[in-house]
Amino acid sequence: MPWMPARTDNPPSWQRNLRALWFAELVAIIGFAFVMPILPLYVRELGVEGEREVRIWSGVIFSAQAVTMAIFGPIWGALSDRYGRKLMVERAMFAGSVIMTLMGVVQTPQQLVLLRALQGCLTGTVTAATALVASSAPTSQLGYALGTLQMAVYVGASAGPLVGGVVADTLGYRAAFFITGALLLSAAVAVLVFVKEPPQADASQADSATGARGTTTLYQRMLNHLAPVLSSAPLLAVLAVRLVVRLASRVPRPTMPLFVEAISPPHTRVATLTGLISGANALGAAVGGRQLGQLGDRVGHRAVLVVCALGSAVFYAPQSVVQRSVWLIPLQAAAGLAMGGVLASVSASLASLSPAGREGIVYGVDASVVSIANAIGPLTGSFLAASLGLRVPFLAAAVVFGLGGVLAMRLLPKPQHLSS
Image (cartoon, rainbow, N blue to C red; front, side, top):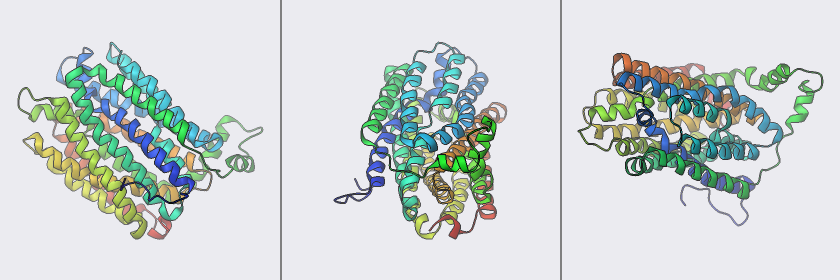
């Protein structure tokens, strides 16, 4: 496959793991993406009536998972540094399989919110896999390795919404959740069998050196785990930019199916069309993550990040004025291409700046930052749509992306600190 690392007679362990994790994440994300675009439509099936109520519940359901993941991200990250990152990938995938299956049998929106919150507590497959790849890939190929992993995520996110939309329109919304559970189970088994975790820096020795064990309290141990992040100005700058651009990308998300429905002719298969639009965005991000990640290895990830953040603003603004849903397909594809470059650049920057053996906690904090944005963004978008109309979230996303590009120019370290 052309997007995978070139084969050799005896490939390094990081390349073998990258191939296995690429496949596992592809399958897992196809599963998660199966149901994400139909959540606002599923809310109606659970008895929510009235467009304003549907929009608000959609925001709450999207944000519930993000709130709990913001809390648990650093905890799982610290545990991965101590007990191994492969174990964290397995935990996220097996737990996700059970939770997503249960979502297919809920009877009320409150039950769905509860399961979404539990999903945030126990899942996080991308963060766990990213920490494993970042801790084993050579520094000179971080953009390539993480961009390749991100490509699996977005190829899965491209195929998942389209197939999930077709399944929802033909077999019903609940069937999509059951299929998701089965896909996550198969991905977890693939990691269990094929991924071999390489030796890693001994985080426990670092803990002892900083007083993280012995007579210290749990609060003090957590602060010691977080110290490499909180004491690093370059890391904090990258995380600040991550927060802003992720927030921008999430503002229009919960109301996208409702917007597609509003501008489409009667009797349109809304779930299928929404899946196609989401798939176009994800496919663009898959290409952008791989190609722009490699470009960042050569020219510096800071430059790629700035250009792609500003490009995202350019591509989101016109979506607020489209009159036909078909125009959302190329605009979302272009926005996805730019977002792929943003995410690959941020991930590679974090990996380059992470202290040896602390990749797990760095990406755990990153997961919290992403989750905070995932919590605020959908709620913001839902309330903007409910108060000012379905077009306003796209304009808000464009403005926030522009802010992210400006912050990247002003705050991020010079290129020599971000890439080798």
